Image (cartoon, rainbow over all chains, first blue to last red; front, side):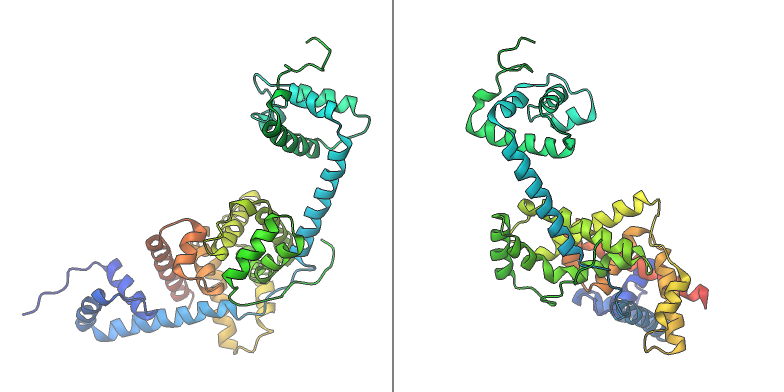
Length: 174
Length: 194
C-alpha cells in the first residue's frame, strides 16, 4: 500500500495555489498528483477557486484607470528645472569671498539639524548665518545649503586650501 | 498641481538600449532625454500609486507620483545602466507609497466603498462581476501593506517575480510566500463574505 505523503495543510495549499497559477515546479508534480489522489474533488475545487481568484486579481489591471489632473512627470521636470535655475542664479551671485567664507566656517561639532545636515561639507550654521547676513537679501536656507554643499564639493576637489580658516572671515580673528 | 497632459509616449516594454542612452544623456543634464526615459513609466506608476492609495484619491496619487518622479530624478546617479530600470522605479514608488501611508497613519489602502461602487458601474461587468470585484477590492484593502504591494505589483502591474523581488528588495521566495499568504487570506475573506 502506498504511503500518504507527509505534507501539512499549509504546504498542501501552497501546492494547490501553484497548480492554479501554473507555478508548479517539475519536482513538485508527483507530490501534487499524490495529494490530489487522496481527494480529487476537494483538490480540484480548491484549484478552481484559486484559479478564479487569480483571474479576478488580474482584472485589477482592467479597471479604467483614474487620471491625474495634470502630468506628474511634466510637473516634476518643471520643478527640477525651476530649482536648478534658482540654484544657478544664486550660484552666480556668490562671489569667491563668500564661498571661501562659508567653507572656512568649519564645524567641530554640529549642534542643530541644519548643522547636522552639513556635517562633512565643512559648512556651519554660524558660518551660514554670517554669510546670510552679509548677503543683503532674504535667502532660502535650504537653497543656500544646497548651493554651499555643491560649492564645497567642487571646491574641495579643486583646491583644498579653501578649508583652512576656522569659522573666521578672512582678516578677522575668531 | 497645474494642468498638463499625461505623457503616454511609449507604453509597453521599453527598450533597455534606448534607456541606457537616455540615462547617459539625462545624467549629463539633458532634460529632454530625462523626459524620454521616464515618460513610458508615468501612466503605470500613477496607476500603481492609485491602486495603493485606493480609488477616489487620484489627486493625492497625482501629487505622490510627482514626488516619486522627483525622487527618481534625484537618484539618477544610483541607477545601474546594466540592470532593468523598471524594478528600480517601482522600488522608489513603493517606498514613497509606504512613506505616504505612514505619514497619513494608514496601514494600508483606504477603501472608499461608494467611490469603488460608482467606479465599478462604469465597466461592462455583470452585476455579479461588479459585486465580486467590489468584494475583492474590500478584501485587498484589509491586507497588510506588504502583501498589498506584492499583489498589486503582480496582478495589477503584471511584474515578474524577479522584478517584484528587485523592486521590494526581498528574495523571490519571499515574494512567492507573500503572494501565497495574500491569496489564502483573500480566498478566506471572500468565502466569509459570501
